Image 1 (cartoon, one colour):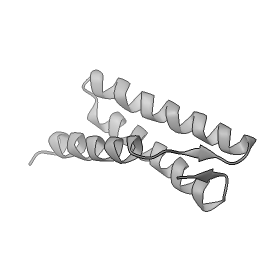
Image 2 (cartoon, one colour):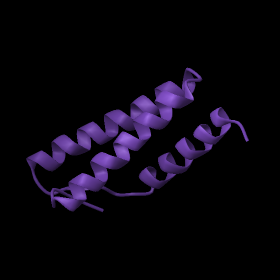
Image 3 (cartoon, rainbow, N blue to C red):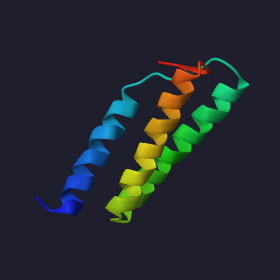
Image 4 (cartoon, helix red, strand yellow):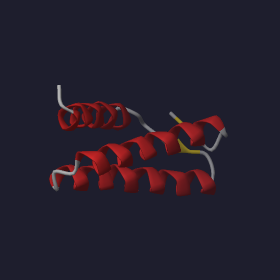
Length: 78
């Protein structure tokens, strides 16, 4: 499998995982994190539409990282 196809599959996998979550902010900082998460999700979709699998994957991974960090430090719940 070529790299572009693999990146596209991974991007779609992580997009589905994130879209299945109901992320609830627990503070104003949590709201800020959620804003960033949603921006990265949107960026990922934008890059996918431009046939840019590297940036699409990178953006969705950043979204996931923000979600995980927010949960770990107690400002997001899902």
